[in-house]
Amino acid sequence: MIVVEGLRKRFGTVQALHDVSFTAANGRITGLLGHNGAGKSTTLRILSTVIRTDEGRALVDGSDCATESLQVRRSLGVLPHASGLYPHLSGRENIHYYARLHGLPEDQVGPATAMLIERLGLSEVVDRRAKGYSQGERLKVSLARALIHKPRTVILDEPTNGLDVNAVRMLRELIRELRTSGCCVLFSSHVMQEVAALCDDIVIIAHGRVVVSGTPEQILAATHTTDLEEAFVRAADGVAA
Image (cartoon, rainbow, N blue to C red):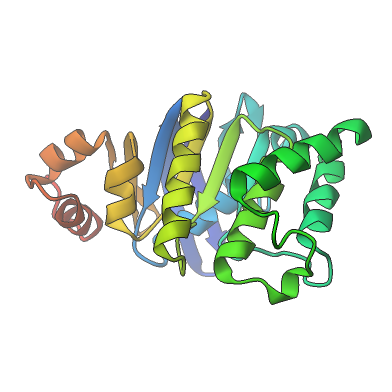
């Protein structure tokens, strides 16, 4: 579970977050939406313990992202916007490296990796160097790295960018499986089709503030429309009631 309370963050003269608060529950998929520069990435970076908030607090599975960052990292799986694969390592070596970083016992590294290779359809490419991967192959290995330690909370930053139809379908299925297993899934996206297909809850940020949040039905009611894309535009541009 993710709990965000009153986050504020400034970069020089730019106030990236003003007062961001929301909750993402276990067993649900929560979409974090907003225009470029709205504060989504800053929020995700705070939750991922990459940066610290100036004010407020963020909790992942009850652990404070600022004061208990190591515990947060143990319970969190993160798929960043850029895959960040080590290009001269094979896919398998990338996955093994992250397994060991997360402290997975050595006798579990191989079996856990094999399970994800099978689930993600990586067997044909996993022993090649990552620098030759397609976008979809990079995504799959990055997902395997994020899930190797069986996290209870998963953060996905614009995961479908640049993917073909088959890769998007695979990702949707996997996200739904994570929800069914009881995981908390938080993902940012600009693709309203993905949001409509997957999200149980939606949080819309504009200018560093949460302007509306709730279930898709609640978002539609708050913005007086029956179309989720139009609801996003109205909310993000300040038209929501």
